[in-house]
Length: 326
Image (cartoon, rainbow, N blue to C red; front, side):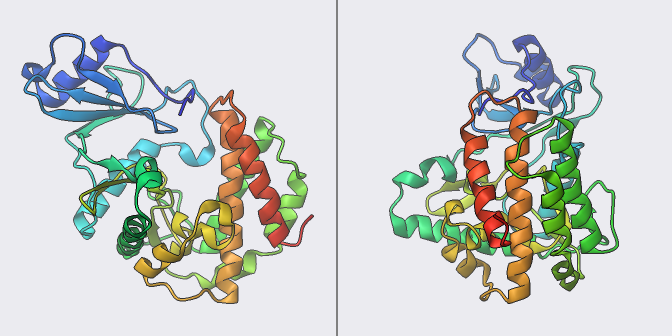
């Protein structure tokens, strides 16, 4: 996916990064040793073959002069913190961090190095999988997501802060930041921003049911799941994690809008019963938050193809109908 947030670097800088992370003896020779991994939407990532034949990935944060959405500030720090938490407190497989660099000496942004995961991206291969195999993967994903949600936090909000004492205060700030990001550009949502705020304010009471901060991966779509031989071997891209309500996880989104896929196998693996009326009210707010981001981020990413914008605008119409707003 093309995006102006991708901080591409010349080969000499990539060689310097390899030298710092793995030692000068691992800097590769020749030309055929680097490949950009193109399916990501935010950071640039390179697949690197070291001199000894081992393969690694270098992931580089966006350049500082490119504007990002409010919730994306410090995203790489959030990812590194998430990887530490997941490794220390769960059995969910995630990449090992070999080296993290915040010095800005080799390039103008933070970056880190990790082993290359030799597996298939579920989001890419799912169309070619038998239905039973895809169902099994989604069920395993639900179980893994539940384990991630078992991590407890001290307060609500991003791992790097700011923190809020209540989930209502936290989510109100989060969705308010997204709307402010949209107004700053300004991005046409197809609805007045004032109307969206009215709808949100009228439905916030359902959030008071959430009293315990839990680790929420939030961006756990099938495109961030690596699979091999019938098993999930790694979950990648953790830069959007926060402490909040587990019901906000991506796997539940299809409960609100069918366009996001059938959630039944995920729900089965997660072990979540049918939602109560209050939980459904919370879910509608979370889907609204997601769809707003999907529309507004197309401006911040500098998309020239309008397909995501058009698709998300249609989803906003659908979710606003769930709130009874034409």
